[in-house]
Length: 150
Image (tube, rainbow, N blue to C red):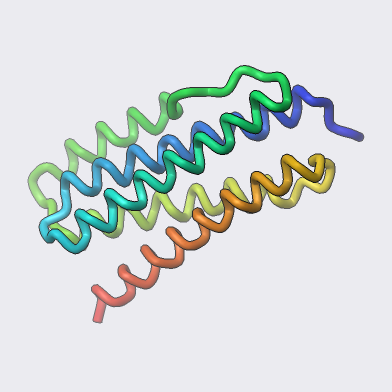
């Protein structure tokens, strides 16, 4: 069954929320990182994700919808729990593990969106551009996590 414009708006807004959650997660990770190397990396990724979210919001507007402008309530609750739990045992490895877990989540969400073959060409191009950032972030965090294990 063909998607309506509302379906496309809902799909993109879901990605907006998840991408904002990711940007917020990176910003939190930057605060928690012990070393400047990871702090700078996380700050750059947070900014990159904010740019991706803005591009997605522009697509929602192009489709005639009202873009989401914040993350999900669930993510805010998760961050609060993680912050509380990790407040005693922070360290770069713990922070990397949390970030990598978040990257797995956002990667899966984008992969699901890319499986939708009923998205118009322009919308698909916006999702694919965003996916480039998501995939890069995911793979980088996975590689850092693996390197820390050795």
